[in-house]
Image (tube, rainbow, N blue to C red; front, side, top):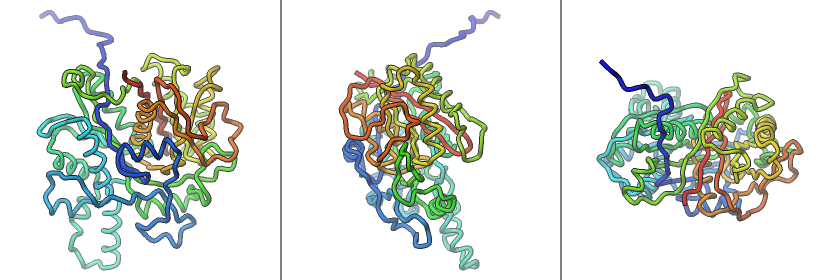
Length: 413
């Protein structure tokens, strides 16, 4: 039997974003978040979700409006079982779904990134089990809702679609990895469309854990500042509808932007500390550019991981310096974590949406909390709101365990 010759480099599909939904402490939806990120507004407030009286730090970027869930197909009983993270996810997903004009009863991949899932349900289970061991009411539900596949299944049921589910829990790169994986599925011809993003809600266990590590800033999150002293936590979700370019154009969809590059790498250096030379970060930035077929000079904006911790920012700065090369002084960089904090599993997806906002509006989101720029930064840090002509935006997401991911978005015109 004769077989056709193998294709070494099969043609790859162009992947576009046709819908986006986002919720952070800046607000609910694209418009209030775009306005907040463009101006560099800070969204931190005293934590009200749980007791922080014994913690070093008592503020976070807490979302205020999570109770008003958009109309969906979940039953009243199912709605009553939603934890905080599931509500954030549904709110972001509904906006993305509506803006893309997608309909239910379809099948396509769902790819989600998260680090905590339904952590608040796990906490509630533990409190009841430790304080009232014989009380079993609601415990089975808490166990089920604690697992992140429940939020994914609830999302599918709420919007009435089906398809394979992939959940990526890869520390703080989870949201970016989720988008990158969905992008790869479409680019390589395994799917025509995909629904993807990340979500995480504030929880007492995670907050206390970061505080006990003394990773939280007792003052203010100041990425790339000489006196930076830690990160700030936030919560939120962002979802994107991805499609093949031909599929989107055939139905006359509005296109928000194009994903043109993605890369991921692990540096194997330390459980919590990045490699001081940013080797894996450099790898992902270079290879994302190679995948996109562009050079660092063409990147108009870099949304840095920029947590505000001493070791992360210095390693990332070194990586950006090495990656940008001769163009480093013309490279515009900022960290939007100064506005909404570190969203953990949602960080990469929200920051991806920020890149789409910047490309759409032709502006650069500032990091307004910087007082004195660390001299290690040879690039231009955006510190005040600014308009700019940008064609490509790059987003970095790095996490514990050496997880590194880079996404590149292009303005679609």
